[in-house]
Amino acid sequence: MKRNKTESSCAYPGHAKSDGASSVSGGGCCSVESVVSVDDRGQMVLPKEIRERANIKAGDKLAVVSWEREGQICCISLIKTDQLGGMVRDLLGPMLRDLNSAEESVEEKVRS
Image 1 (cartoon, rainbow, N blue to C red):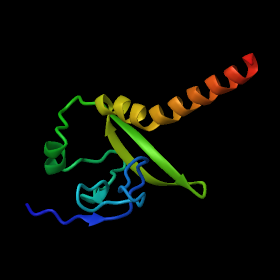
Image 2 (image 1 turned 60 degrees about the horizontal axis):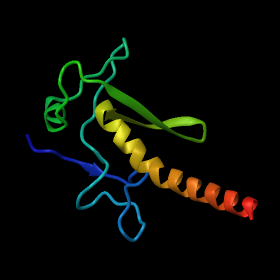
Image 3 (image 1 turned 30 degrees about the horizontal axis):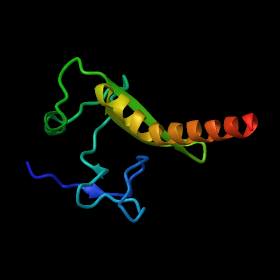
């Protein structure tokens, strides 16, 4: 089955080209892979091709991540929970290091 993807600007933090611009070309970040319907019980089916490419098996846990714009949820993403910790570390790690450095700098100034 041939994929027909529609690429759009990436909403994921940390996915930017080296010039700082958001990118979905090349290595790619975000694209519309498929359109699914939600049934009256709120359930949807991830297409087999996507499950296979993402190595999603029955029983796997997925985190539902949402973004809000103007008080409304505009984007919903699924992230495999076994990858979520690494993504959070990658995102928050530099901020925590900067925070620790700033805290140490303040402590040094207080001591002197």
